[in-house]
Amino acid sequence: MVTTKHNLVRMSQRGITRKMMDTVIEWGSSSGDKFTINKKLAQEMINEMEQLKKVLLKIKDKGGVTVVIEDDLLITTYNTNSHNKY
Image (cartoon, rainbow, N blue to C red; front, side, top):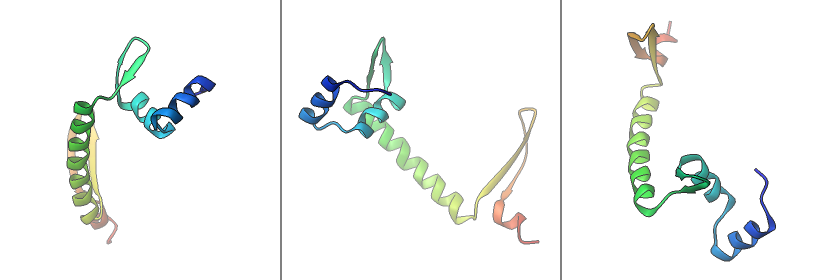
């Protein structure tokens, strides 16, 4: 996305990085032409990510998890590394 000189000046003045702006655009709530992550939403997202991290660490410890789905029906699941042992 192209940025204006005005935006670059305001970013510098306000200590807002490009990564922060990209995060707000990708994950924030939108209203018209504005995107926002307020303090409450930021904390909710942090909590969700902490829970996701816990789940991902468990998956990693198992060597991965595979899920087989067909036509919206959960067929089976298994530890990915156990499938590769044989």
